Image (tube, rainbow, N blue to C red; front, top):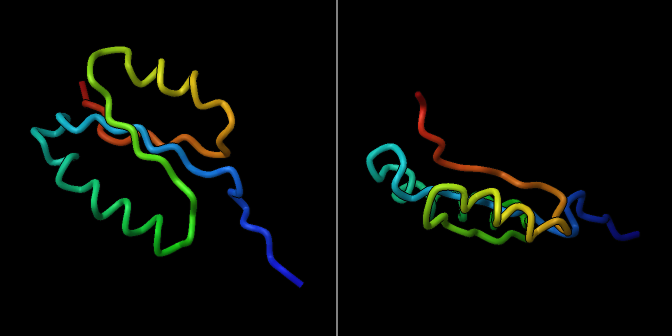
Length: 74
């Protein structure tokens, strides 16, 4: 019997690498290692300008999970 991954279509990680004074960019390798360690298929996309995260999410409607990393607290 084979177990099916709960996130067979994967995880989309949308990251703002400039948030938290660049600390988010430094954490991305750690996030990727954790996803690989769990065997989760994923795609990491970094934002380029304001509003880009929304555009990215709209283009990736076929994933199971969208994780957003690096929001700026106001």
